[in-house]
Image (cartoon, rainbow, N blue to C red; front, side):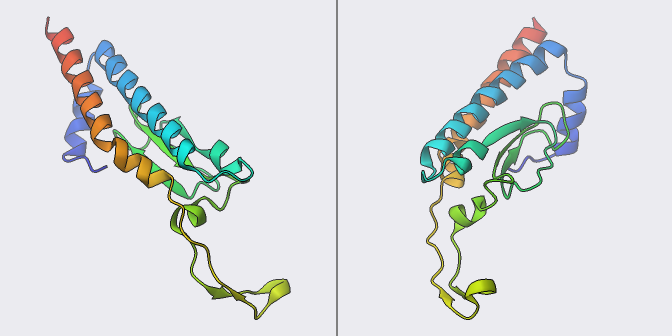
Length: 152
């Protein structure tokens, strides 16, 4: 998700009252939890490792092996930033499942044999696309509510 005038938004957030930040954080929490749950429901179920690797993290997230990432609202490292991610040391293949793999020749023990590749089984970005508008409107409503409370 792209945010226009991000620097200006960060300055405004920095000067917001604490009650306003609480309201916005609650909306981010609801939206991100909803996306995590939906993405988990779309994952092809085999071992469960990939499903278990889908999660959200507040603030900056520097994963070792998370190779499918979501959006960061408010900019990475910011107090109102949540990152939704998939993949970890056990589920290193997260992006292979999401995007598929191209046919290729194998190396190693089966060197020279042809690998047919794997079809994509998207789970992460379909969840994002389904909930994008809903998450934006939830966040907008929270911001309006918070501003009204702060003004009164």
